[in-house]
Length: 97
Image 1 (cartoon, helix red, strand yellow):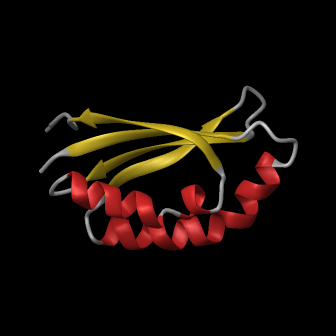
Image 2: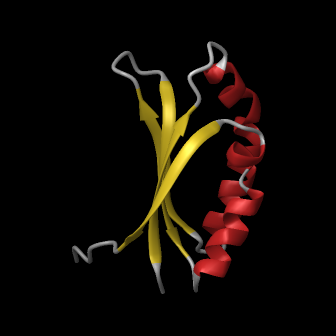
């Protein structure tokens, strides 16, 4: 099953962190559902040097690009403007067992 690395950057507005925190509960609700369905492998926040959130990185797992697009179409951080930009790269999680 194809995997993808999503790397997202929050906007530069002075209230970007406030916006992230406002949307975060909806993002987490969606992410937990996607994790339970096996669509998210792992994800987390990118941090500034002083430990403030400034973006995200997520490893995703979808049958095809249509599934990936469906995920993106419903991601609250995209819909509500938290992520100002993002890139998606084909990815393969290493089997370290």
